[in-house]
Length: 323
View 1 (cartoon, rainbow, N blue to C red):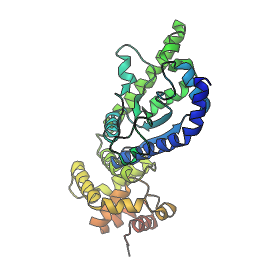
View 2: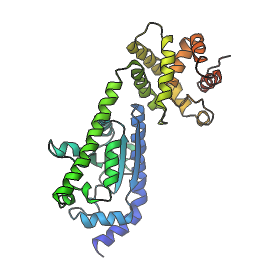
View 3: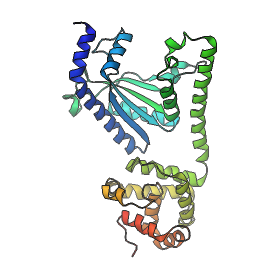
View 4: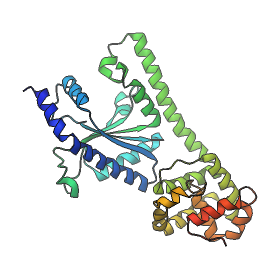
């Protein structure tokens, strides 16, 4: 029996266990990122049998046991500036090889495929699940990307220009066009990051970003920022005389004080079925604070723009009666 045939047999038997391991890593990362208020899409997948064999045929330096990406875990985030924080979370919760940062590897005069890879991501030796998934055998390749980097990776997946070795074989004109396209993706990533920071200088946006930090600790449901800003601007005057930083401090204090209760509410499936239009919005946390601290003014201002029935509904979602 050849090594490839042995690998086929081994993977057929072991793939379900590796898939379970990948799901464990992904779920832990999903929860850890949510606790930090970082919006991310986390997925895990064990290699298909044919894909594993192809990788072994191409990567002669690896055998079945050493292949680093039998399981892949992918984390896709919004902003480039979130990458260091996510790396810290992964390093805190798991062991792994030194991070392979493709952008850093390109240096100052090259562009191309961008992502952070953390090979051999595995459970720590004192982890309770390490008996079931021994770190010497069960490890995953974690890929950390922004949305823009993910676009490049997906578009280049079936073409040769994702890999430096094969891209080098292209003609000079094709290589230049590939580099120009990759450079545009990197510029877009940096600009989205800068724009987000510059927009954050506006008081309403600053409040929205502060609310998002807490909201994404409770749920990963995407919100409508246009509606968020409308509500924030409507209710901000109820924080009489407070500056934006002072409002943020008060909202932080309210969240910390009621965090346990809020988490229970957002995990209640009944709330998702019969929720207010504002419940799965970051500004719901501002509405909650205002109903606790200045109900009358909130009711008065709310009715000038939105139906009172929606405020009743969001209040009920938080266990508050307006009767």
